[in-house]
Amino acid sequence: MNPEARPGRSMRGPLWGVLGVSLLVLGSALYRWAQSPGTPARTESAAPRSEPGSNGASAKTGGAPSAAAPLASSPAASTSGAPPEKAKEPIFDLWRSAILTKDAEQVLAVERSFLGDRARFHDGLAALAEKDREERVRAFSTRVLGKFAMAADVDLFTRLLENDPNPYVRQNAAWALGELGLGAVAAALHRISEGDPDKDVRAAAASALSRIR
Image (tube, rainbow, N blue to C red):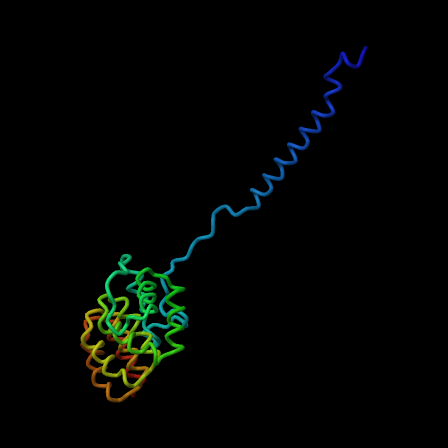
């Protein structure tokens, strides 16, 4: 028979070739799919842990008390509202925004800048610690000032410990007084360790007092 009269036989080779290539492509795609992770990586919360950049010690163990608790427990806050007059440098706006938007990495970065030039940033942080309307900003600013460990801040920390309505600010102020180690604040710490309505503030004051005695 004339080969041209049997097209099925003449097309069998090309057909199997196309089918083989298709199976290889499909197999390769299935292999890549099987090797890929089943779910995307979980994104961690930006909220800082108990003490960003430290060993995570709390006020109860004598370390820096957690300024992160207000961040974790409060709803997202507006970054609006003018900071105190002495905190007008752009870096203070960045500091407030990072705290209020729970941007842990930015909080740590700005904190490192503060610690690198304490004389320049001290007054602005002191104004935020005492006068900012956002309790979280006051708490974080008080903690950083405590790391400065400047004896001139003893009156500021004592005022915050005795008068600030937010327990996290008072807790950080107690820790900061312990960092100063001045015997003159022993009476105030003793009074707070027994009379503050918040147990964590009482514990922070007791821990600070033990470091002074």
